[in-house]
Image (cartoon, rainbow, N blue to C red):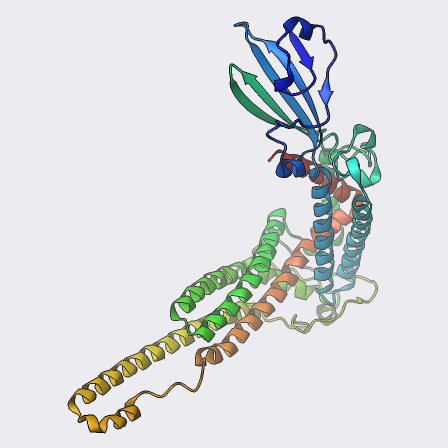
Length: 477
């Protein structure tokens, strides 16, 4: 019933008997001049197209023409390369955050060292893979064949990813269908001797319990780890927004633009309230206390005593006699290092952020009120000058010049008043971010240590499978 011929729909012969003699699949590797998809935009998305044309006879003795175009997608390699760059930057950021925890007790320092080594190994591997991917040229940039599925440097690229567009014409009506075909996401380079990704993700659960119980230290639930990531994400997004809004506020003050100043101040207040709300999470306060108990100074002051503290979030604090190497991480003065920890100190940190915002709001209101009074005085003075000019002899006209208001010698007193308050707000925000980031990094340290215990294979496989899946989904959009 079906016949296939070479060329576009316009080149298909109407001679059915001649068409029935063609039993081979005929295809064209180039688009025809009449191809509506032959444009620079589609050319950037579809590479190395192969076209086939099918002809089917319908039940009403009419002909249905099907033109299929199968192309390779440059997203097959460009997206994995972007993801690899993101992985490298994210792991570098995590290493820096772990270093910012400063001095820790021997056990936690060894744990941190293992996690940093784990991330460093991943960074080195991903950088090598990214370098090799950047060397790809020609068809290798847009397609990974099945024979290359076990290639080490191509494991982040999906297998057999094709974009297909089917044009169906029947009874002078044309419909297009877009489909993406791809091999199942899997890391063939690592193989499946110990199972696939799903089995490996389930397996570490029992090992995590043994790691935690072996130390009997500070432990956090998966829900608390998830909340820690949310807090980190919130403060990381809100800090640059607040900083940018303060710069816009100063610019509006320089222009003495009252309406724009109010609009920016409203946005600044909204973002700062979100920032303070994220910092008020009890997990941050309790994690700072837990981080304090992990300091060497705390262990020196308490000796070998076992301390248990119920902080209301489901984790236990305890100290044990642990031997190890001296931490080599630099000290950070913004994080309390003293042996006695004031639990109310953190409350004062985020409260200072809110108070700084209130000072800015009060100053803006004061400046606008002063400006309104100044405008009223100027308007009254102008009215008095007008009245005097009507009731005074014209020969005394030169005296009127002395009644005109003098120009303000200060071009922008608003900005001068707001600058110190804005600087204070930025400093308070930076201090709060530094402490919250250290606290949440400490919460995530235990989970990162559990992942590091199983080596980089699991993390590497997860990232590779995710890269293949995301590339396939985005190619369909």
